[in-house]
Length: 283
Image (tube, rainbow, N blue to C red):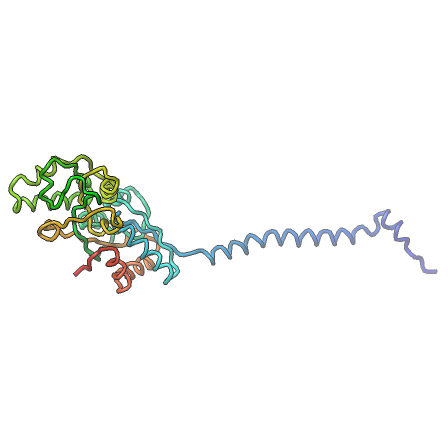
């Protein structure tokens, strides 16, 4: 007679425990495999969805124009631009001290040339121009109507001598000695009550009525939205022509996209945006 196994007794005695153990081991293996696979899949998704980006260090006077350029560039090429704005000299120092960037845009040639000589930038190109102007508060409490009025006892604010706009200001005043007489520049500079770290700092003090007048770029005066009055300088901006330069840093890890951004700025679309913010085309 065939003997039947009492399942309950067999279970209790451990004779068929091995079958459940195999199932348990398989389930555990599947769970472990799943847990190991999920991070890999997630990592793959993150890498594929990661947005390309470039870092741009640009002169403070380029703030509004470059913000729009960055926005339109991203919309067109799906490449994010991370801009950082400050005085051209400050940015040059940052680069020399190891700050990472793909693109550098300077408000004068000097700082760009220095970086090229030291191997931080490959080469550069002049891409736009600006113009130096005098601005006064909308209420114009000192009743300034021309740069000649700066010989009076007024409160004048300018940028420090290390910033391009500060350099252009001092050069323009010296040039105007030929119109208003020797010593004109020194007389005007004796009325300086404050020096800004960049052109935005100068403009802010005039807008806030903390000064009777200040020297800024025409593009910055435009961003004040009617809060200042603009007074043109003789000799088409005091005989100075602020020119902007842009280049790719040698340490850039994304030179292809950096070049694409510069080409976008130089394109008709880019030049149209620069013109919108008061910049002039580079001849």
